[in-house]
Each structure stands twice: as structure tokens, then as C-alpha cells.
Image (cartoon, rainbow, N blue to C red; front, top):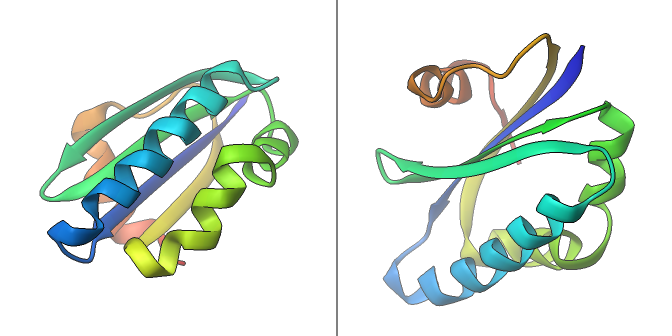
Length: 110
């Protein structure tokens, strides 16, 4: 069983895009080398910037979440946009074709 994390963010406006991308690229690089990370990918669907990461455990994901580039990104989140998060245990990650709908229906506003 793995822990799946799905996030989605809508950037407030075009002027916030550079700040978003700066944080997004640094957070993605951090996730790729984080202990317990199995995979991480990102896609933009219907104007929402999504990430889906697969972790060995929820604890491994939470350790990544509260350190480094991702912590800095979370601190600037409200200034850049709005979004939702979704985390759950599963045997495998959902297909990307289902991610946006899962995020809409089951995501928690942050």
C-alpha cells in the first residue's frame, strides 16, 4: 500500500505565474530526491496545476511537506493562488485521466 498525494493550484493571475513556477520547480526537484518518494509528476488540466506524488508512507510525504523548498512554497501559497489537496492510501496511483475529477470531488480546500 502506498500513500498518494494529489494537489491542484490555480494561479491568481498571470503576474503571479513566475513566483508559482519558481516554487513549483524547486519543490518538484526536492520531491524527486526525498526519502520515501516513489514517483512524482505534474500536469496542467483545465487551468489547474496538478501534482501527483506516490510515497512509501504518509509519514514520508509529511516529512517532505514540512521542509526545504516545499515549506517555502506553502508559506507563499495564498499570495500566489488557491487550491485543494487530496491524500489517500491505495495499491497504485490513479490514471491521470481521473486526477482532476478526484481533486474536484474529494479535494480539501487549503
